[in-house]
Each structure stands twice: as C-alpha cells, then as structure tokens.
Image (cartoon, rainbow, N blue to C red; front, top):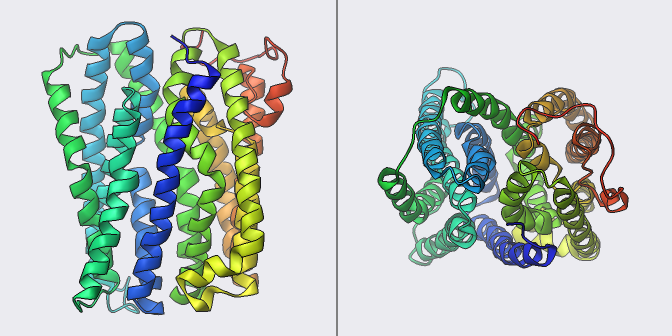
Length: 449
C-alpha cells in the first residue's frame, strides 16, 4: 500500500524531529569535547573522528542501502522467506566488512614512518579502529530496522541515545577532574555508541535466526552482488568527501585550522536536516512504489520532499548569515573569525543546492541506477579532490570550502539530470512542474517495471 503525501510528511516529521535532536546533540557533543580539550587535542579528535567516519562509510559495504533496496521489494511481493534470507546475507557481509576495515586501521597505527610527526599516532589509530567499527555497524543496524518499517527504533540509538551518552560521560569525567584528550574522547565516543546499538544488534540477530529464511535463488544472489557493489560506492563517496576535506585541511594547514573547518562542515549539516529526516521514511516507499510500477507516486513524493527541504535549508542558511559568528564562538573563540564565517556560508550554499535537488542519491540507489550514480561520483570526486587540494593549498580554509561546495553542487545537479533522462523522474523542486506521466525514457534498469 502506498503512503499518502500527508502520511509521508508525518513520518518525515517524526524522523525530522529525531534528526533535529540528533543535530542538536551532535552540535553539543562537539562543543563539550572542544570545551574539555585544548585547541590541538580537539583538532586531533576532529581529524580522528573524520578518519574513522571515512573508513566506516566503506566498512559496511553498502549493506544499509542494500536492505532498504531489497527488503521492501520482497516484502511487498509477499516473499518473506527471501526477505529474511537477504537479511542474513546482509548481516554477514556488513559484519565482515566492518571487522576487516577496523583491522586495517589498527595495522596503519603500527606502520613505520606514517605518523612520525604525531606522538599520539598509534593510540589514535587504535581508538579510530574501534570508532569506525561502531559507526559502520550502527549505520547498518539502523538501515535494517528502517527497511522493516521500524523508523523510530531504527533511528533513536544512533542518532539520539549515543550522543546524549557521550555528552553525559565526558562532562562527568571533566567534573571529577579526569583529563580528556583526543584519544580518550575518541574511545568514549566509540564505546558509548557500541553500548547504544547493542539492543538493536541482539534483536536483529534474534529475529533473523528465528525467521523462516529461504535461500536466495541464483538470480537473486547475482542481483544482490551486483547491486551491492554499486551501492557500496554510491553510498560511501558522498559522505566521504566531507571527511576527506577535513583530512586535507589537517594535512595541508594543520590540526588547529582543521578543527574550525570540521566545525563549519558539521554545523552545515543542519541545512539538509529536513531532507535527511524525510529520507529515513522515504527509502522503503521509493523501492516499494517503483518496483510495483507506481512511478507517478515516486515523482510526487520526491519533488514534494525537495520543496520542503529547500524551504528549511533557506531558513537555516539565513540563520547562519546572521548568527554564524556567534555559533562558531560557542565551539572555540579562535573560530569566530570572518574567514570561518565565510567557510560556514560556502558550505551552507552547497548544502542548499543539494536540498533543492531532493532525494536524488536515494532515488538512483533504489531504482537500479546505483552504477550510474557511482560512475558520476567517481568522476566528479576525482576532479573535486584534486581541485580541493589545490585550492586549499592556495587559499586556505576558504579554498577548502569552495572546492567541497563546488563538488557537491556538481554531482547533485548531474544526478538529477541522470534520473530525469533515465527513468523519467525528476527528484528536484523542478519535478513539481513535470508532466503527469513524466518524460519518455531511453533506458530502464534491470528489474524496473
């Protein structure tokens, strides 16, 4: 059954409220860590967090999106045996991925010559390995719960409970006089996250083991592998770019400036808050509707999502324009400069364009166009990262912001063009003016109606 626009709006509002709480707690979490550490230690924590996040995006091998892609399709066709079998495959692949990548991060910590200039290199890598494992697994667990329609219980542990726990524990340690450096802060962040998602993990494993799981057919296994490879890259590259930007700034300009860029980047996540929230409820709806042949419903829901996201994005961008300096000062007085305010606004403009493009990435991932999205991201990001390194070297943090924003804008606009031409669905605000039946298409991905 299709959800109405009003129903999706209500679910999106619930998810948006959780994401708003998540954004607020994330903001407060970094503020608290910045308050209890000095400028250098916070810069190291920021770089370590960015590095662990970067690894975690690839660690789960795209399985959080794979289950969102296939579970609604099988469930809507009343093939629950295949749905549970698919979930078993995804759990095994995701766990193997996060375990192997964590071991690689540990190995990096003992590699000769790599971290000679940073005395804390080895313990930072060890703590980053734990954090990357926790981030990767928690993202998969959240996706698995959302695929089954458990929106609130899928989001709360990773988005709210974890961050609140980190804030409370860091403040308690500071109150009792325990020194908190970059390594300790990273371990606290990782440990609390693992504890927060433990109940999710137990429930997910128990439900999957108890279920009547049917083996996937050879065709289903082939499709699983093909889609997984595309989704792995398509879901990993977009968030990875912002982390790479922070690491580039840290490598080129030092950890102190990297901390300011990290804060600006994280703060501008508020611009796409509405889009991020609605996407949590929208993913199963897109998959179910598209593969049952209801493209008109997909067009309406994606375009209205873009409209709501754009309105919220413009409002938050205006707030950054007026109160940006004050917001940056909360983290660290050294960040309250015109330069960092400009960095914040540049990141914000790029995020606003992404909001106007709507759930473009989600649409391409769930409609068989994940490989087209992956090719787009690889090409754009190869040039984007090279440009980012150059402009960061030439223009400092302003250059880093311009390079990142330009890359984000490019891949979002080109992604909308690909969706419109390939499946006749324009997920941006311009899709509101599309014809009722959509534009004719020349390409239909395998499995599409």
